[in-house]
Each structure stands twice: as structure tokens, then as C-alpha cells.
Image (cartoon, rainbow, N blue to C red; front, side):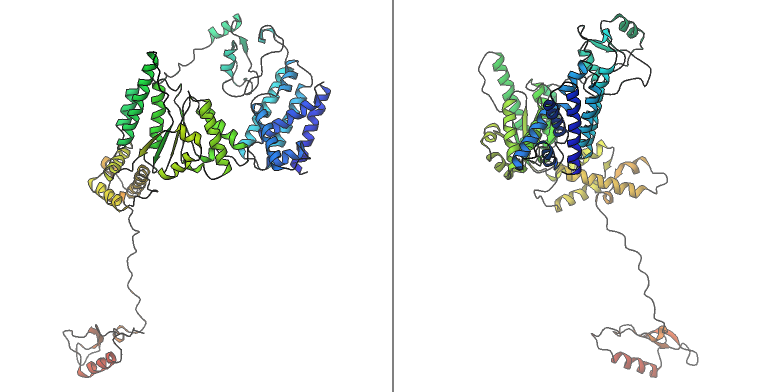
Length: 559
């Protein structure tokens, strides 16, 4: 065994020993410990094999190991946030070994995250689970207060889940929190101090003396279908999309009216396929669809859960189904938006995700809408891979690329929201850039102009960094130089170094500009001058210069 496997085995043995002393079935305690370990290590690469070395040492088949590991993880997943069943029974009876059993569970939690290489959030889950176990045992060790029991029972409150929702859970059970000195609250996952039954007169007296709490912010009013459609209509471009969404809304409205009138209504699929290039507004429209369906009463919440392949597919056989089911559970009541859905093809993990998705769509046909998005051609192959997809996705909405005028309008809108404005010359430069940019499937559309705007803001800031007293327009206006990348400035050219030899002895090799000694005064010293200057050279000197030039071939480079 590896070190991690040996540590887990020792912790399991310690748990079994405590269970035996407490009169609990040792086999049940061992099974509970293995489930806790699997649940906490479920997402750790390589954990299944090391877990099986302890749980099933005689098994070597990878498929059997994975099936047993994920089955145990599924059964123990609720114990990530709640005390285990055997710990609850010990705590409820206030057994003296409840704390020892909880401590043994925390050791298993610590050893579980050492199986494989655990990411930090897995370690955080194990820490939270350990706090929950110790909190449950801590409650068992406290004296019994008759006022803190439910229905006169001496077992105390049911185990509380950790987190900020504890007070809400207590209110549901008929309990209220009494205010106490700062810093005296109990840790998350344990019974908070100062809890009294809601009907307790003492609690009422304390509540009357407590300072009034700040009023909660008013909830955002529900928006009507007409308001949401108006938001869609003011979006730039997307004319075909707007028309199709309006048609879908009309169908759903009439379907609802027919049901209210006691007539049969054909069941229309509400799931949608969005096809188009990146940056064409698919996510924004998906969010509006969720809100519209909620306003029509077709979805209870209308939230949007946006995912891609990485959030649906896991690294092990059997784990993908659970991961996909968890994502779907988050989206129930609203819209699940799967971007680049065509990536869910071509391997067994993707097939497992699709099969699970079809099942979840069937199980939640009344309160889950799925929208899949991607490039047109790959999406055809994605839908064709599973008959269940083809029968459920019957409506395809095409998102066209934006025109140059629409992209400039989008850029103006982005700039206005950030309190910038483009000059006319800047807009012309943007149009030239758009005209020169190829519209391949990788073209970003709205994302392209957003990136252009962000780069322009950066150049604008660089341009004004040394401004002493910039005006409001200086700070607001984006110029043509801001929206187009400028080439780096070249340093001023330095004059070429002159050779050490005197200037009057450096003739041009091509004879176009020959420097020869010139005497301003026949009896004076020679000075540098150009041939053909006002003072002509002497005949002898001219002849010497001509011979030097004749010695150089026309195409020969100077030496």
C-alpha cells in the first residue's frame, strides 16, 4: 500500500474500534467511513484506485473499481455537509463516545483528500465536513435544556447544515436566535448559542428589547412579457432572431389560453437550438428567453445556468452522469444553456453526458428548458447523434453575423455606457478596419468591437498620461489614433560616422558627388568643396580626381 492508502486503512480501523466499543455494528461503521472517503475524494484524479486498494483489495478490474467507488461516493455525498447516520444516532443518545466517533470521521476526511492529488476546493470540502462532524458531537456533550428540544424530546435539535442558512432552518423548526455579545456565536454547522423556541416568553422579551433590524431591500418587481420583448426589440440587429422569439411567445400564449379555456393544446417543445458565430448575442437572448418563460408562467424561476463540455464531462466512466445530473439540478426551474454543445460528440464521456441530458429533460419536462448553441454544421451532427435530442430540439434559431453598420452602432453603444464617444474620424477608421477584416467563423462580431473599444481606451489613457489639465472632452473623446494601433515610433536617424581619414579624401564610389581638394586661393591651403562649385579646381587636381573615378566600375560597391 502507498502511504495514503495505509493512513486511510488505519483511520478506518480506528473508526471500527470506536463503533465496537459504542455497541454499533463494526461492518456498518466501516461502510460509512468508506462512503465518507469516496464522497470527499470523488473529484480527485486517481482516488478511485487508491480507495479500492483499501475497500476492495482483491479487485483489480478498473471498471469494477470505478463502479464501486462512484456508487459509494453517491451514497455518501450528503455527508459532505451533514453528520453521518451513525454519528447522528450517537449524538441523539448523548453517548460518551460520540466525540470519539466524530474525531475518527475527521481523520478519514483528512486521509481521503490525500488519495491522488486533491485541488484546494476538495480540501476545503473535507475541512467543512470535519467541522460538521465535530459540531454534532459537541451538541451531544452539552447539558440538556428542556426549552431547546422539539416536542419535549430529549434528543435536542436535528443536526444542522453548515452555512449562513442555519437561522432560516431554525425558524422553519419554530426557533429564534436570541442576540448575544459579539463574538459569542457558535461555529457554522453547530447549534448556535441563544436559541429558544419561538413561543418562549423569555425569547419574546429579548426580541422586544433588541434593536430593530435594517429593512431588507425591496425585491425587484416582476417584469411583464411585453417589457422583456421590448428589451429584445431594442437590441441591435438580430432581425430573424426577434421574429422567431415573437413567434414562440405567441405560440405559448395561445397554448396557455387554450388550456385555460378547457381545450386541448398541442405540446410544443420549448427547447431551442441557437446556431451562429461567436459574439452574436446568443447568451443574452437565452437569458431573455428564461425571463420570458417565467413571465408566461412556464418556468417557476427563469434563471440561466451557462455551461460547456468541461462542466458536464468528468474524467472517469460513471462520473460524467453524476456531474451532468448535478448541473441539470441547478438549472431546474430555469434555462440550461450549453455553449459549444457540438463538443459533446466523439467519445464515450460525451455520449454519457448526452444520454444523461436526455433523461433529465424527460424527468423535468415541465420545469427545465435546455438551449444548445454552436456553429451551424457541427450542431447538425450533435443533434443527429441521439434520437432523443432530435425529437426534443425541434426549433432552430439562426444568429446572423452583424453588418459593419451594426458593429459600429454596437461600438457606439458600448462607448456611451462607459461615458466615451468616438469622433467622426475614429468611426471612419473603425469602418476601414471592419472592411479589411475577413468574416471567418472565428470572427468575434460583438466581441471583436468590444475588444477594439478596450484597446482604444488603453491607447487613450497612454496618450493623456502626461496631460497637465485635460478638458472634459479630452477625457471623453476617442480619436482616430486611439482606435487603430499605431506603429512604434522610429528613433531619429543619427548621421553616419565619418571615417578617421580626412573628409576631402573620401570620394563617392559612384562618382555622383565627388569631393576633391579645392583651393579658394591658388596660393592658400586646400579646403573641402564640391566639384562644380563656384571655385573650380586646378587642372592637375581635376585630372587626378577623374582618374580615381575611372578606377571604380559603375556597379561595384564601395569598399
